[in-house]
Amino acid sequence: MGRGLSGGTRGDALSLRADTVVQGDSGPGIYLTEMPRCCLGAFKRAVAAPGDDGPGGVVCGECRGEWRVVSSLDKLVAARFPVAVEEPEMKQKKAPKRRMG
Image 1 (cartoon, helix red, strand yellow):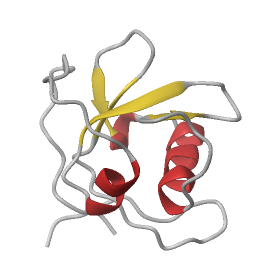
Image 2 (cartoon, rainbow, N blue to C red; image 1 turned 180 degrees about the vertical axis):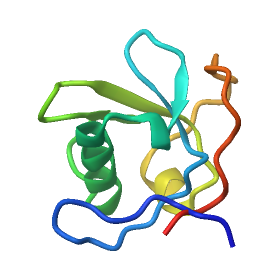
Image 3 (cartoon, one colour; image 1 turned 45 degrees about the horizontal axis):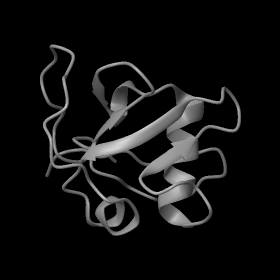
């Protein structure tokens, strides 16, 4: 099986599909594996414990980066965030394998 995103600052075992695409305020869409570490932690916490983030968005408490999900096949992510229908503009990079961990 492929690899996904797991781990975290407190040893949580949440594993997300690495092919989920997020988009910042003005940049192109990126895969979760390309997110800054602090933002990835904020994203994983938002998926694990849905709260008062805006619909479809996560704000990192450390760097104040704002992210929205634009594409995901991950059931946990899709249950938490409405996914945009349009194709995001992407950096030129191959898609990561399905899961890490």
